[in-house]
Length: 148
View 1 (cartoon, helix red, strand yellow):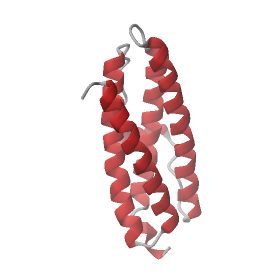
View 2 (cartoon, helix red, strand yellow; view 1 turned 30 degrees about the vertical axis):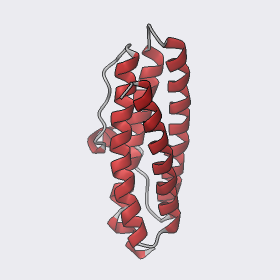
View 3 (cartoon, one colour; view 1 turned 90 degrees about the vertical axis):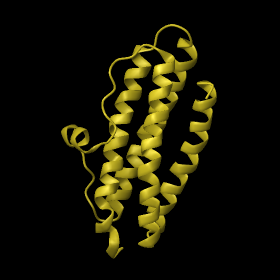
């Protein structure tokens, strides 16, 4: 995999984005109040548990192509296009954040899919393809929940 240098920083940027997104999901889970509490409390937990698996998969993929995964939160914050979320208690605001964050993650994953296809890195390509498919489905569901 000689061409990994071309997209290794993009993989680490995606890792950083997922790390910030993970913490934002934890905050949503901890702070939800009011209408939809029970439904969203469980959904947020499902999402942060899935995100934790994705984070590990990304870090291991980065290692498997001979690179070093980013591991400092200061670097995640400096690198990620996803920002820390202010504490929110409102379900609609939380779901809108998730939809927005997932749109950013999709943008990064699609760019990586193109780069890994060109580099003939089937392992990373398959991972990106799976993440894209999963996110497209959940985005449809979040839009339906928001009645968009």
